[in-house]
Length: 472
Image (cartoon, rainbow, N blue to C red; front, side, top):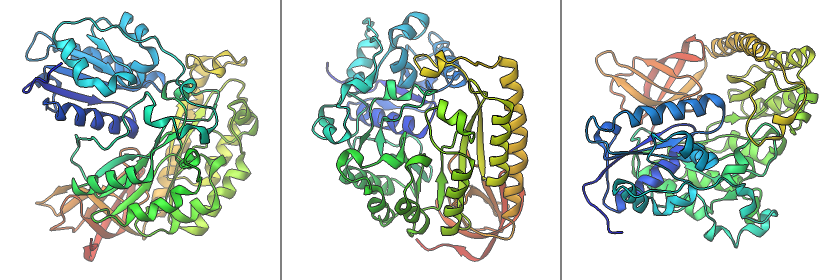
């Protein structure tokens, strides 16, 4: 089908950094075929909603966003609404049947021909949504056997085609897609597929392109960054890749997300903690601390092992940022289990903790477990742990008063000379921010030397130091 220059498309992205990269890759394909990209769905001929299907709250947000976009039809330019992303891939024909307001539900296999798909929708053609399948079956079980198959792998595009939708100083760089772990509560591997690393030369080329587009911090994302390289024959590949990415002209900071505690190795800890230009930031997915709950989750570790890992991190980088997520109310969780989680959190002194209440996820092993807690009890436990976490995070931030920080500037209030950004221990969007006073002349994307002088929850207040602009 021929391209139709002048057609407008808006991409609305929900969920994680991996989805942000997928949206920008879709945008790159569409722009190359003559589509005009616009920010507002109301200004587009077709609104593409990149959905999240991780937990119930994310699913609801995705549905609400699709419905809101559908309400625009007939009121202005918008003619069609299309669902893509994890929710669309996970439910396919079921989502299409239950959400007639969406004009099409597209799966990952549609991404390569996204322009043709959207044009057919605008032409009034009926798109038959896919039947969901377990994408782990599409590649060999052994990671080493996947290398010959990845070029033809039916999944989200992994090539260099990309268009930046967010022109801010931080950009996500996707290390890999999929996951080989079999956590009993998680459905992601079934619809994202087996773990597939992107090749180093692709990553370096895209990193250089992002830097040329104004990205100062590159946020390395995947479902499990500690597994990077295992299907390429070198499990230590990330350790050798980090300094190469950090050395790219224009890159001021590199940050790694989502590390599996059971797979973290000493060399990776040292690389993140000590490589110039790499943020000493450790996003460790603990999920719980009670060994009995962790085994039911099909995960490994316990309070003492996790605390030993944290101690190793802080021995390498005393001011490192450490964040995690925990699930409360997992089937079979006892009061003693919950108390063990609280003991761990109090001792660990983490910078940020996301607290989630357990809910059954379609197709997961845990959905069939006995020992389910009543919803009201899960709500109460979430509130209890959240209250504790808020106190602990606030105390951890207060403990940083007097510390030097390097802040990546994201917003500038020129009249006051105040800027807002993130220190090295603060990840994008979820870890709090730092307000810097006395930073006259700072620009978005610059790095400021400052000293922490106050805190508010996870957020910090810092005073710029003399000669605050960090070179480069």
